[in-house]
Image (cartoon, rainbow, N blue to C red; front, top):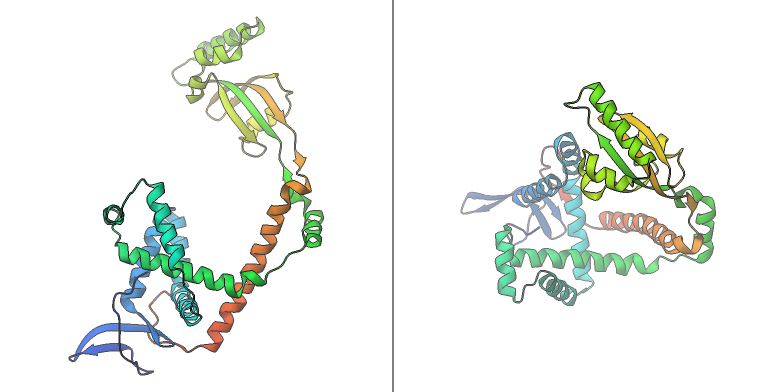
Length: 322
């Protein structure tokens, strides 16, 4: 996130507010070496955090995640300051990566010029320079972590094989079913009417008519448009009542009319893929990435912990709730 103010003078260690002509200009929340975190910078991050979560969550889960991340926001900002300071001290340059990323954004969105990109960003409430600055900071942090953490992580084949043997449950692919259905709703029908329609459909199937044709004629759910084709479901994705019925079928078989919570279903198992243990060669890269990611997480925390211990950090005015 961009800084609201840029300060070009030294700070004393116990100052909590910046003054200009005897007037309060900005409150300092924390000092990180020669850099600072201001109250307005913190609040801008807080607003952005809420908007980001709001686009993905709502209700109680939104409040829960927001309060959790708000509690750690100041520490996260301090860590980011340290990472950027360290990256700049090491002379890392990500200009080329930023330019390439921007060009890819333009290409993917059919934008020809920077001026057009600026206009599109303005429509979304973003300033181009601030957006570019944020991109640069993100790439700098990634480059630093790669330089100090990623390139020192090594995995060998024996570890990957061992993980596969010790955790076979992670690589079991559940059974998968492809289903066709005729659904009848009880709404607006007497029991006699509903029973009569069920018997009529069953009779026509027993006489050799295709279930797909009958689903297009009789089914009362959205699957009517696809001739009753429900697509594929992995074990555990279907409602329990339906899954128990499907498990008793062989491909091509039809289960008798089944009452579920919102109506009656006639189910046909079109195809079944049995559960299987995925072979090692199929999951080798997946395991390698998992081991790498776990080590990267631990090593990154170690690296940041050293930065926290070896640099000057002073929290002057911790925002409430953080």
